[in-house]
Image (spheres, rainbow over the protein chains, first blue to last red):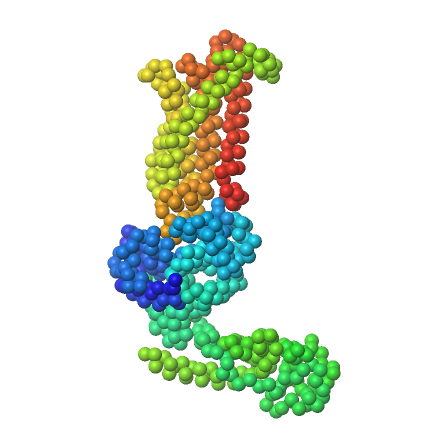
Amino acid sequence: MFGALIRIDSVTKRYPDGTVAVDRLSLEIPDRSITVLVGPSGCGKTTTLRMINRMVEPSEGTILIDGKDITQQPVNTLRRSMGYVIQNAGLFQHRTIVDNIATVPRMLGWGKEKARERARELMGRVGLDASLAKRYPYQLSGGQQQRVGVARALAADPPVLLMDEPFSAVDPIVRKGLQDELLRIQDELGKTIVFVTHDIDEAVKLGTMVAVMRTGGKLAQFAPPAELLSDPADAFVEDFLGADRGIRRLSFFPSSGLELLTSPIVAVDSTAEQIAARATEDVPYLLVTDLEGRPLGWGEPDELTAGEIAPERLLPYGRPFTAGSGTLRAALDCAVLSPTGWAVAVDGDGRATGVVSQQTIAEAIRGAHAEGRTDAKAAR
Amino acid sequence: MILNFVNAFFSDHAHWTGYDGIPTRVGEHVGYTLLALALAAAIGLPVGLLTGHYGRGGNALSLIATAGRALPTFGLLVLMTLLLGFGLVNVMIPLVVLAVPPILVTTYEAMRSVDPSPVDAARGMGMSEAGILFRVELPVALPLILSGLRSAAIQIVSTATIAAYVSLGGLGRYIVDGLYQRNYEKVIGGASCVAVLALATLALFWAVARVAVSPGVRRSA
Ligand SMILES: Nc1ncnc2c1ncn2[C@@H]1O[C@H](COP(=O)(O)OP(=O)(O)O)[C@@H](O)[C@H]1O
Ligand SMILES: [Mg+2]
């Protein structure tokens, strides 16, 4: 089963106490992609999400899934066709991991063994070791529990996945792992995912489309992340995006267009002639690699003595970027971190494939921006 | 001195047979206890589970519970006897009134103290309200609910001696008759039986909790 298109049509939610949590919100959530709802705390993200599975009923407006009004089917049938993941995972502490994941298939009438088999398959899919199957939730870390939460939501292969700040309660490193895993799973499964977060970086990283909401439950902007970063609709969105949106936007441009220089690279066992031949006017430093071609560090040509290159005396080369898949942001970061001002590109195995200067990267950025503007115009 | 009485009571062969023998009296006592506990649970559990699940009626509950606790059990027995004459019903009413409050209040509290996130997750994945109550909340609330049942059971065991005052059986017989006959060996023997029964009740509940409560709940509690 594949994802479905969700249409939120001028929906308002007024709580009994008078709070207007969502105000005439209209949103077309594309199928088979991740749409992120982002905004400050209390802006109505959770309310919006919970109206999709009718945990909250709209005061006005309608929500359609694949053209069908969601109120047209029994509420539990609707909910069983949507995975639901919440912040603290909400696992059932009296059930083992495998039985937690098997919950919805069991509700749908699957046999116990078939449901467990499916649960085990999903454990693999979300990166949980099979040995955890018989454990109880208290025996798992927060990150592992959250993976179980995702697996449980995916168990019955629902076309839609609703996620409410699922990774907000775990530490940054675990969060990054979970985000990468979600993107990988989404590549394989192609669900329609609605993902709520208050973290704009998470939104930009995960979203195919990002809906920025402002306090009072109003939509501020609905756009792909690159467009959000280049053309924020107003001061609120710009402010919410934070200070370095220019730099962050570079993550949307590939570094593959950068012209890499291979001449200033020497192996650690190079002869004096080889070093002399590589030293040119426009490249003040040489990158020294080990015998396999992995970078060791930068050195000035006159200080490199053949046969006596001491790797520990070389200048550090910062963090290299991957030549094919890396972004302009990674390349720039690398150049800025490097004391020589030159970034090192490596291949998948960590072997140096070339070096590139800050100037070259800056030109590439200018080029990308110019192209981005024409693209944006063409899209309109 | 007391130990001598206890020893004498339990080593007398006459005390082990017949309609006034220990097995008979223990059997009667256990019978009263089970009946009263079953009745109290039949009232307290459903009301506690439902009010706890829906989160309503907490105030009314604590009011009823306080009122129930304030009623003197023995006074109620006398009143019932005056109104209804001698009989099992007269004994059951005060015992049930005694046992309902701990069951009701603890069950309500146990349900209220269940973490709301799994309940939210369960509802969001389309579980029915009954499913949520029995398969999500109850298993987690079970240890506390059992502790409520346990205190109710212990109270019934020690209070069921009042049955003897209205000419019924049970271990109270030894105490009432012993006091009347100034046979302190009998009084203390009866009291020891009640104490042993109370301990057995504790053991029973411990065993039930071992079997019925999921290891995942036991360890994370
Ligand atoms: N059940 C409720 N009753 C009354 N007000 C609520 C309720 N739930 C949320 N709100 C209010 O609605 C607004 C939006 O809440 P919510 O959707 O949870 O925001 P977010 O998820 O973006 O933080 C907030 O002002 C919140 O206080
Ligand atoms: Mg929220």
